[in-house]
Length: 229
Ligand code: APR
Image (tube, rainbow, N blue to C red):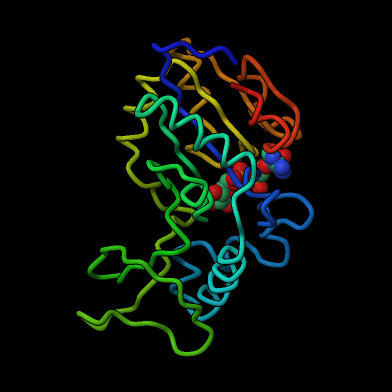
């Protein structure tokens, strides 16, 4: 992909970029929701009904993510950031920290982070790598329940103003490893097309919103990204 010094790249990543680091994607065989229903573990209603079950699910995901290491796809995006500086905006739906481990300095986690929790009352996120399998955590300040700092279905992704501002200023939308089935992220390509900017998708299969992309690079993140720019 030819980039010039006047290009501004908005990159959106999904679970697929971490697949080759050993982290399961959500949909498809071996996907994370296999064996769990979204309603059981990733909605405010699930939390209200059974916080123990929700913490068991996220504790297991913390354990898996703890041992994961970035792959050549994450490293390629970190390299691109070093070359472009703040002309690259990296927005991820992923809650792992593999972009950071790869060296990306400015990563916006629109669906929250697996390694942060927050008190349901104080609402301020704090770093947390514990796995809660027995007693559930409570806030040291006010005693209220502590929940994963994850955006669940039915909740609004983080800093949408910042996201749309960055999308408005981009000249290229690069999307990697996301099935195009979860909004609002699945709609970014639509906004980009309305503004007439270049759009490209990287992944081993076509996403649901494939028709909206100018270019589709079929292949895994590690096979395609290192030589894409
Ligand atoms: N490289 C690139 N893409 C890959 C790879 C790979 N090695 N392996 C799989 N993929 C692609 C799949 O083809 C699929 O299109 O990654 C995509 C993963 O899709 P999903 O499992 O639906 O994950 P994602 O789109 O990130 O999910 C969005 O859904 O449940 C929520 O909050 C959760 O952030 C998540 C959101």
